Length: 304
Image (cartoon, rainbow, N blue to C red; front, side, top):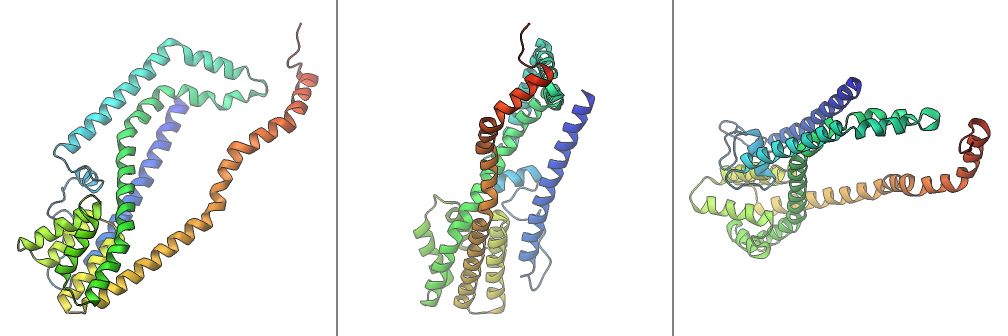
């Protein structure tokens, strides 16, 4: 029992470390791309970006789209409540003696195969609270992935539209109005661009508004886009050529992503093949022979 507990705790700690490392690496990459465009002045700290909470959990929820007041409190309440529910269910199952019965059934399987699953069954009172407590975190992570995917999907046509309008002679503010009229406020990119437009119209520095836009989204593609616009604004590079270059780079990145997904498809098909087809084939082909072998050697299935 203690071995199963320590094994589950070790696996959980390893998964948490890997996820935290990946988030930190992505955050550092976004900050480096954004700070590389600053040509003068002090470097902007990620904890001083206006409009983004300074707390780690609050900023994580903010980037996932949970921006209502009290989002952090609701997240922790849901996590603790579900953990208590899972602990209560696990304690009830443990006290009912059903786990001991299941372990006894597994121990009686011929060939001692059931002993492989006894640690998993014994760790159910610990696995249930952890699994229930991870439900809010999983939901937030899924919302964050959907939001990033929606932003990336809308960013390429927005860049193409920006580049076309800039080549037609429109200024960036006029092109931004056209883009907002096209995308609207229903999608995440439209909402972020509307916030950017509101900050610019209120008199804030345009470079700072671009940095806050990148901080609110925290995506490498958006950071690269805002860095190029900051450089064009501070140095005086042509806006049309900058936007066209950004659109071409993003088109190439999306093409590489599509090719990578297409190349990984055969490897992904292995898991449904192994899980769904091979067990049935083994049972139909080797099942009778294996059953006959057990009857002849161990008396499996014989009656007295």
